[in-house]
Length: 209
Image (cartoon, rainbow, N blue to C red):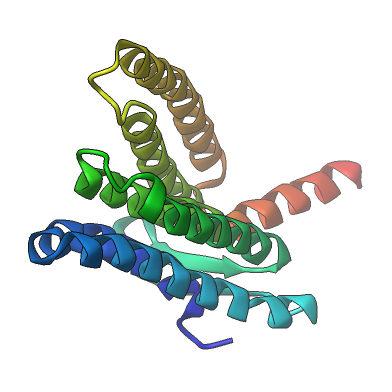
């Protein structure tokens, strides 16, 4: 596994989404194939971590983020996170490859590829996050992209209704998730997955004894 694989797995599709408007101005086919290539490279980095976690490798990689809360940005590399990230990136690769032909005659393709790449980045970032704040940020990205992609054909009333339904349902989930994160933080003063787990484990052991 390369040292930066857990970061590049979601940063590359995020960068690709931001580049879509520029690539579209250069050439439509370049935009379409670039979207596919960005998620393909993301897949390479996620799959590169599988041999390590298969052999029991696990690490929490952190960098300084919000000093006021003593919070670091991080990626948690373990069997579950890498497995989920690999599924997301590989399926996204297949979808974008299929989209090159299937979506060829549709309008708004720059918008489509922008949100598809952003969705992929959000999903990979969500499953690789090592703390609840990061998870929530990526969750919001995924929710935004879901709304935009479900309602992609905005000229169709049924697509608009479906998109709005998805938006409202995810907003309820967002609120509940945010409340849960706040409750955890108020009770533990921490947002890192491993830190919270250790506190809960210690509290359980103390109560048992």
